[in-house]
Length: 354
Image 1 (tube, rainbow, N blue to C red):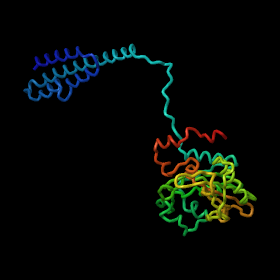
Image 2: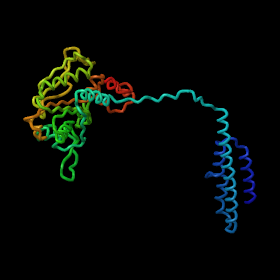
Image 3: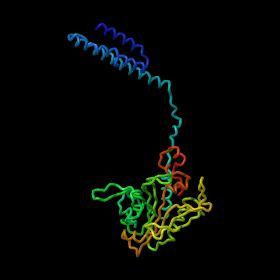
Image 4: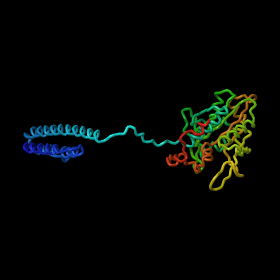
């Protein structure tokens, strides 16, 4: 056995002396210490020896194992050092070369549109107000003069959550109007706010998604009337679509939280293939608006003898689709990098011009 070990040691040392690179050395290490390696096989054979020879033989094999391991580790260090020196001698880096350009990220059109719309109304004196995505029934419906029998309260339209510890049934807000209520509860008029944010409704198709974005505005002051609302909306439409003579009309409508109420339409030309804003004899609805219902103001403890106001609201995705020619609402949320590269924005172009 000991003669075999001495012979094995000589064979391994001869092989090690011929190794010239770390890859070959790694292969030889596996050949020696792997599951079927030469030293491993000797260790396995100990159990077949007589008891009086096992201890001495085992010690001799372990000594050989440790000796070979030490030689291999030193060999690794020497080879790595040689390889590094060769790279330093044979490879060079031109430090004067410019760095490789990183791929430029893109801003989603939703983010761009929110920034554009918000900036326009900020120039009119509106301040940004935000609120929670999870709302209670009062702020989302009751305070906005939406009666219990209103279709919006039904399960197929609204995402209701489990009751909390107080037995209150919360929901994902169906619009950003609750921000108006919370602002009126905590801020005395006069005030002008713009409320961008997410809203949620149980609907999904080419023109609807379960989560979408809205921007709503609220102005409460003394002597505010419908003409102020119309002037505000007209200025916004002309600036947002960048069409000075854009046709805009106010069509009578109904909303529980405004009275009188109106839908805002813009002139366009449309067919099955395209929509052109500002030309043609067709009309396209872009937002709803109206004078704030007195019941809403009373719910927020606003003195209706002194103050009145107007409100408006628009869908961010719809505004982005019309301005930038995007045909499918769902594409905003599909995380398609090719789509984002085409429709995305590298900077807030329209914001920087302000």
